Image (cartoon, rainbow, N blue to C red; front, side, top):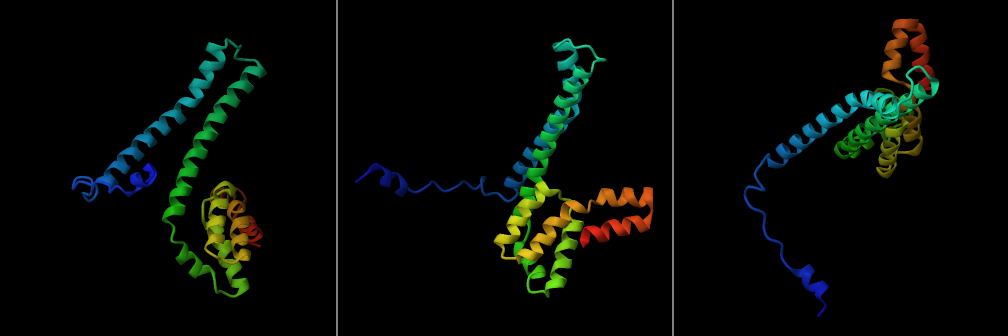
Length: 187
């Protein structure tokens, strides 16, 4: 008898009542997410002061030079983008795990081709995803067997129609231009 099979056959000890208490997992998860959110916010707020300290104080570069300004911008912007990507990737993973794919598939699949494309494009237009986060949703839609044309309509429309751009365009250029922008993105 090999020892590997003996290890696999051992019964696990049953969890205690405290481990199975309702809400204990949710409370731990909420506490961990709150702590991570505070750390994330702190890192985001300290990225610019840290970049300035590193470039001007630690490296001793002159504040008025182009090289110092470029290095400060690079360090600050890289840290900011990495923090935003980490938050975005976590949010999209959480959304993907909690999204009922069958419900979306039932809504999008089985429709006439043109109607399905319009629904896919509308779903892409109202979701606040860029192409970085739209691709995991696209993959989830294809694994849920939503037709490829409809998923492509979602994938193309999602980064094109930005809610912030719609609001800004409406305020700056008026309603006609905004409607043309949305219609072109949907088409």
